[in-house]
Length: 247
Image (cartoon, helix red, strand yellow):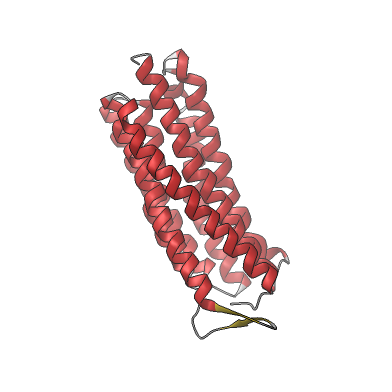
């Protein structure tokens, strides 16, 4: 763990604190909002709430671990004997990333066969992507990081291709009143997800030391907020619109 300065420590701490507040608020909103959607969409909204609840818990643990790793003194910042545990983030992703894809599929209300087929394939690819990315994340060797990044990009590209082209026919079959919203939800997913591999490679592109630590932590946090809380509220809005139109 690189030694950071007090300003960087506070920036990351504030980012984690903001994520805790956003995930907690989104969880309450989504669970309370279940009563506003038709029964066939309650599962999608429930999963959205579970995703933000899991993220809320893990960001709480991440925040505690970050605070324990450093001590603020009168002269600045000193490292403690406790190592910052970034594995919480990957445990969170392993649980939430497959669920994020299921949210989108379930709110589209596809046929049972298509829902099961797409759900299994995309969720499996998402889990594989996270598992392949973790060894690179914890490695300090540039070559090792690139190797695991490329390996994790294989399922990542598979997922993006399926979201961009594989779901087009299914989206076009949605009711006209929500077709654009579902398409926008897919676009939001793709854009948010594309931010993660960019943040991952920052330390391999010459951004080193304390700056890399700060940018990676803040970057992942921003991406999580968009991909989970913002996306979850978007899924809720689609479910409400479809419920109102009896679609």
